[in-house]
Image (cartoon, rainbow, N blue to C red):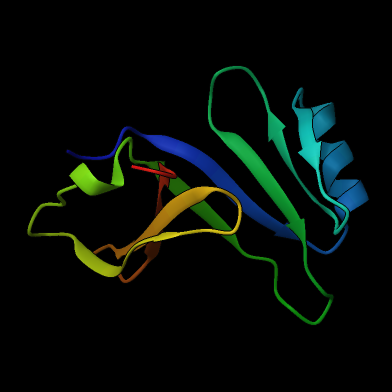
Length: 114
């Protein structure tokens, strides 16, 4: 089994309020937010955006997350370097990290319980 395309984009920001309004102005709807300045935005059936505020002394990062329907059945090809195997997250999914030929890290996300 392989990936099924882009699941999400994880974004960090220095200003939750401004960034949230930016995505809402682009047509995204806030699905849920937390009490620590983060939340999930959706726009149709495409990938969702998860936005989280980070301290000013930290550079905001961006990560594209690829969808895996079943972590246990996932079998990457020989050209995929697995950096971390699938692990449960605190937000109810399972995630793994792989490295591409240019050294970029990619997150893979699967439903919990698979």
